[in-house]
Image (cartoon, rainbow, N blue to C red; front, side, top):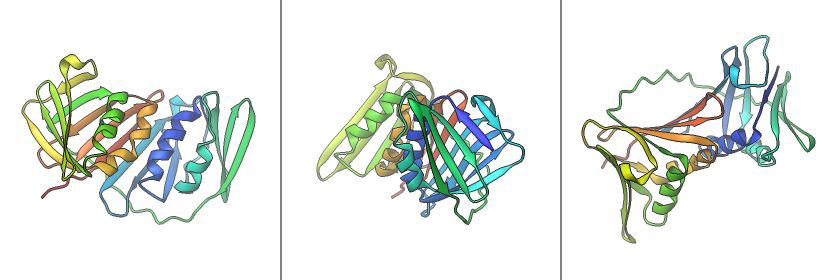
Length: 245
């Protein structure tokens, strides 16, 4: 099995984010594409990362393939990717290889793991409010609130996203409105509010460096679904449980 993707940096930043949430997981490759669907040990976060077969320059898959990954080790290898590199993945019987092709060729071979994989159902969650913001604004939002508190509250109102953090250190808020230039779209029929652990939001802020935009969906005291559109048709969906007092 061999896959080749035009931009290794996409994988670099996605794997970096996922490795902060889970230590081990299983990757699946079939005729539809490449997919990692996994949940952290505390059952707070569900991640669904998928790149369709049509997005690969080379997609040589004769049968369905699954292989266990140590995410921390893979993230260390992915740090070596540069903006000039293509990425190839080759899967053998007991190992898999990561190949960077840019200025020369570099090949890293890692062992496959035997990983217990819990079957995760497809999540069909109706969330009433949705906004789209630029990927840069998501990353800056997280950075702005990080010094103040470990819990943040999202308030979605028609035409406005407001995120607040409060602690003994003080209070901070970030307001993104229609005239800001970074609120790309919104579907907010009525105001909704929910709180989340900021640490979990920072884990995937690296993905915003290769995402075109980020869609945020919430409801009152409901999970946050963040969808990062990446590559050509790829996406990472990040489902985060709320913090309810």
